[in-house]
Each structure stands twice: as C-alpha cells, then as structure tokens.
Image: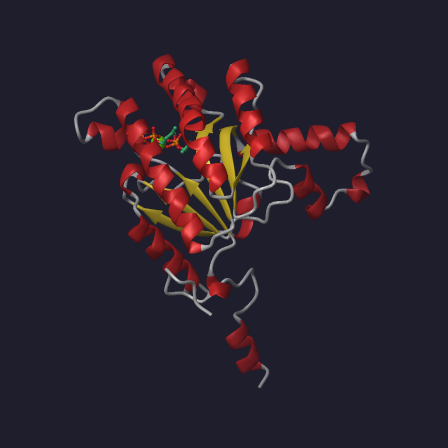
Length: 248
Ligand code: IPE
Ligand code: IPE
Ligand code: MG
C-alpha cells in the first residue's frame, strides 16, 4: 500500500520525524532583513510543514523551537521568540485542534512568563484527545537537561540501581510514551546535534539540507521522506538480505 500523496510504501514511512528548524537568521540576513523577520518567516513555514505532515500520514512530529542554549541570544531576540510562541498559540490553536493535532511540550516551562506557561498548558489540555498527529514542541528544551531531570526523578522515586534499564530511562524523559525519532531533519547545513534528543537519536536516520528553514518546502520534505525510505537501518547488525544470503 502506498500513501496517497507520497510515492513510498506505508511501511517505509517514518513514524516519528523530528526537525531542527535552523537557519532563520541567515535567511533574514541574506535578504537584508532583521533576524526576527527570519523567525516570522520560519513560523509561516512551520504551519505548512505541519499540514504536510498530516497529509503524508506521519504520526509524530517533534520540532526544535527554542533550546536551553538559546537564552544566550540578545534579549530582544529571546523576547521576540517568546512573543512568536504566544502569537502562534493565539492564532493557530483553533485550526490545529480542528485538524486533529495533539499538542505536547517537551522541555522546561518554568522559565517562561506565567501567562505563556498558562497558554501552553491550556493548548495541551484542549487538544489532549486528538490523535491524527502528535506534535511535540521542544521549547526551552535541552537533551542534557532532559537526562539530568530524568536522573533526579529516578532517584526521587527511589528506584533501585538494578531496575534502571534502557526502557525505564526512556519513561523518565520528557518524551515518555513517544517512539524514538526515525528521521531527524536539520535545515541550513550544520552537521551537529545541538543538544536535541541526544538519548532518543541513538539510531535515528539523518537528513541534512543546506536549505534555510523558511525555504524548506513540501517538495523537499517529500524528498527527505523518500531518501529515508531507501535507507537500510541495520542497528549494528548486518542487513537482512546479507544475513539470508550468508545463511543460504
Ligand atoms: C533557528 O534559526 C531558530 C532558532 C534557533 C530559534 P537560527 O536563529 O538559529 O538561524 P541561524 O542559524 O542564525 O541562521
Ligand atoms: C538549534 O539551532 C536550536 C533550534 C533550532 C531551536 P541553533 O542555531 O541554536 O544551534 P547552533 O547554535 O548552531 O548549534
Ligand atoms: Mg541556528
């Protein structure tokens, strides 16, 4: 069976796609615009990418919107990014809800303004029964922070050391219950993980493109999914074809 708008078999479709939405600043710079104009354009693009994700039939989408390191940016930029999150919730929530998108947050809410925290929590609550697409928004998210938080909670719960397993750690992460990302897309060409899903990405496939985030369109998204479908995920073993051949 193939997905209606994609030329790949359904069983080759990633269940979970994660995106490092990078390059907004350079997109703006290349047009002589302020960085915040790049973030606005990036937000417009995010709306298109979410629609495409629903259309392609991908079930989980995680987007990296603000890292624990992004606090180190100039205060006006940080303020602008906070405002954008608030504005997106105000303007897009009803539509996302109608489309069956379930919003979740990964990271720490504590450092955000109380009104913004409330908006995020309300959005999560409003959409909690939707199941067409699970959209994890990584905002004030850091992979190391997530692991530190997990260790603290494991210790607080008094879990004996011998009970600490791979599965248990996964259950203590912000992404508990979400399958690991099959495919991670990074726009704007940097070859690094930038503290994103460092535990969950153990066996993710990568698609890195020089395209700046605001220009990452549905056609390139489709190409990323097709590239993924052609990959041989070996997980440290040998490919099933080779295995069969060597045992014939
Ligand atoms: C990604 O774009 C958005 C955030 C990190 C919030 P950047 O702002 O990092 O854009 P570049 O990398 O400077 O071009
Ligand atoms: C990663 O991009 C964070 C987000 C996309 C939110 P950065 O632009 O912050 O990453 P570095 O600084 O290039 O590693
Ligand atoms: Mg960047």
